[in-house]
Image (cartoon, rainbow over the protein chains, first blue to last red):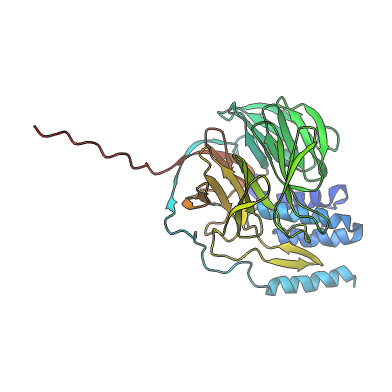
Length: 70
Length: 338
């Protein structure tokens, strides 16, 4: 499995997907490239799904900020 | 036009005009006497050429020298020997027993491996052969997971309700509460008073995630000392769609060696973000700094004081020996002249 060359967008998409659990649609258009972009998109989707998903978004954002260096 | 599109438009403008998260000046440790400590690489585990690790997150070494690692993109936990060879692997995507959705931190004791999954509000307990045993419900979300030498589980709890302070929760391997040590004050916001911690002797030492504060508490929660290591303010928070979020981590992790020295990983405000490690005496005095070659989210010191950290965006674990300056020895006695 060779995903290393372009890892960051992939990781962000996965973080976002994990944030939104199984309901996460992966086709948001352009890939998010920062934790803030991922959070923005996560919150937009969460606004349709319900308040509980805001917590998933926040946890995903904090993980992103701690783990991924931008 | 949908409301969310309008909100995103204004958020985009706000984000573009917002001030930078941190002042532009470089951070300096508060103690001028801090010396730069050296590192010697012992080995490197995981690379582009192999599939040992995809994106590791949690790491802990046991007293036998084995390394336990959680790999988020491989939905697994793995065990490596002291030379970095794979011994065991367990896990797959899912919500069933022993399955992971977003595996995160782990901690090991003599008999157990404790694992967190961001999507499961439980501590997953495995034996050392990575067989799933049971799950412990989390009383509150956990931001940091450790074990004590006697096998006690220790976790930093982030309160979700108002009127409750964050705490270090000590429990047995069945989740029965042994003690709770409260710290901090900001219970109003879920990200307000998160901290990484280590247990050092009878004390707890906290490195706050969003405050410029490293703090030593005794087991009753009494503050023994509290330090600011960098000339920076606490993290800034901004509001995104009504949710307050911190813009950076001030400190990302903390580890302790056998001598009780503390190793604090600097976050966004550090001169080298996620690479600067501030080494403190047990009393909290700055005694040195280390600049890691690669950015990391985690520090771990094993029972022989080898340091583990991340490289290559999570593909690689690096093991280092820390080189302290030679202690000045006693002056040799001069031979008496004949």
